[in-house]
Image 1 (tube, helix red, strand yellow):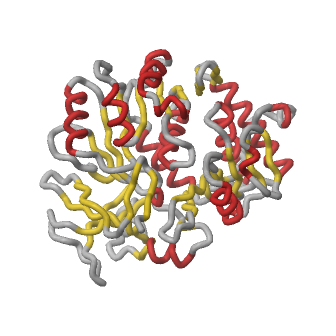
Image 2 (cartoon, helix red, strand yellow):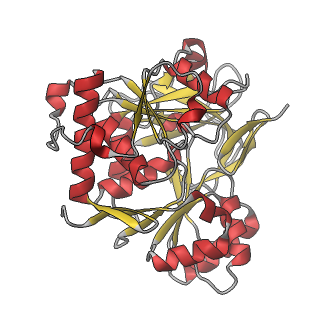
Image 3 (cartoon, helix red, strand yellow):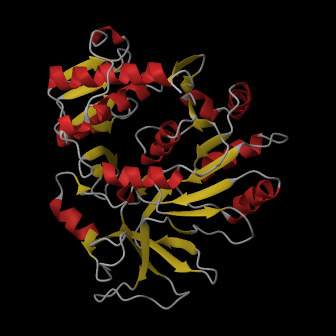
Length: 401
């Protein structure tokens, strides 16, 4: 319904009709004025806002792939990412454009739609653009063991697989509180809700650190579902003494036993809580668990993903059921690889010795996660730890020195 509310930020909102028209106009502008085409990388460096959503959709509708840049990042990191991605166009806000430093490309301000308001609000034809499922949807940078961030290239087919999988999660929920930063791949979950016809409510950054204000925001905006990391959720719950949270989509790091049991209590009261696991290299989520019972786990692979628990020797054999091994992932969610890093791509994305040509979701490559897991008796996967010194804090990958 074009008159239904698509996205809300604080006291402003856009209907689906308004959002679609503005994103289409931006897309026409990018194609006609800046020659954006399939696999063209376009940067977006904005604060949380309605324009953030318009910008992402405009890039995708133009056939390009968006590269999210956090304006709070150090200028040196942003400059490296811009150079590494070869960005020639960056969408931004006037208030943060200074962080782009000496960027010599084109900066397009999203503060006013006047720049592209006279362009057509009609949809661009995918076939005319030459857009196919193997083209890039986005490139998201993660931390690297060398200290340099690395760009993970995700294709449309992988994003579509996630969207189809998640479209029937949280049945009946119509208002999604979007907490994830758009520079994390977890933010794609918000777009999934938007593309399935729900109302996307952008949670302001400052509110996420103030549980009392967040509680008011949840209530005043009638948020029914919220995404978050376990550590942030723990921080909120420690303040929300008599407030029952909405349905929850939790991921980005391991859940403690104490938090799991606390969440299982909410589940018993009718709150739906899903614990999702997945590296950026596998398009957000690879496994999912309904939080209930006493044992902490990351669930089972999504329908289009395949999991293998393998030994750490050269033969990479399947470990005995219940034994610890490194988790390798295959399936439709696998990234194309790392941008401009063929050696690292070959190291982390290996040939699949268990490829099954009769399985439509079996892939010829596997991603080596570096995560130690084991199968529980019920078939769920338990996360044990890392094979290296990497830890995750509030969704950030941190390489310990």
